[in-house]
Image (cartoon, rainbow, N blue to C red; front, side, top):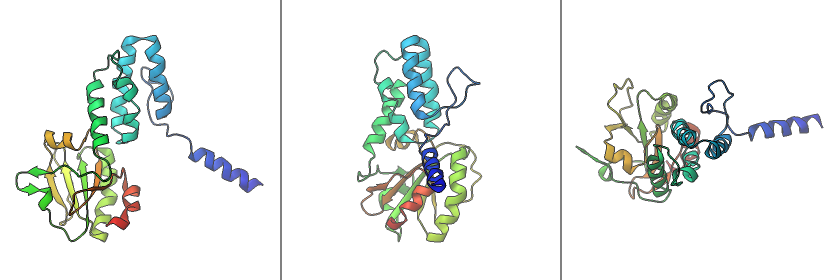
Amino acid sequence: MKYVLLFLSFSLFAQRPAVIFPVYDQPKAKRISIIKVIIHIRELKTKSFIKYGEAVDFYYKKIASTGKNQWIEKLEEFSLDPDCPANSRAKINEQIHRIRMLQIGEKAPEIRLKDFLLSQYISEKPTILLVFYSPSCFHCTELLVDLIPYSEKIKLPVIAIQIDEEMNPWTFPTHWKTIKANEKLRKEYGVFSTPSLFLIQRNSLRISAIPENMTEIKEFEHLF
């Protein structure tokens, strides 16, 4: 019986939503989950017009930094609200539009930059991993520390796409292709935060998966 209770306790704990967001206008408050973020914005909407808009802007930046598209979509009820005064409304709507356009099975946008053309990329593997990153991005560093040796081990072709002009401290494997994205490319792929990842089929350029981290990349190893 004791083991059953321990298992149930662990299960309940594992199902709790991640508590990662600071509370708008309450710097000393305990961090809250995405569910409570939405509840908080709804409450502010009924109390203060100005704080309603500021909260949407505040939480959008925090949510975008996580790279979780499903959390961005939860802000749609506010970004589509014509009475919402948030400065980020148009940006949120644009990002959600891109998220929904680039679904699994859809064709990835062509990448045409100087001497590089995605549709002409040559690889012996059937799948290519696109990694949009920034050198100063903490989550990118976490990913690259594991992705570089992993890709070398299984010879996964990777196209590393830097989204800014910062100095790049990384030395990538020789089988990686490195390029820099312009604003047009970032918008076409809906890249508003990094890292942003796409597994695409080499021949058709169809999107096979949109993993969010190293664990999910490994889950799609059968596609490689």
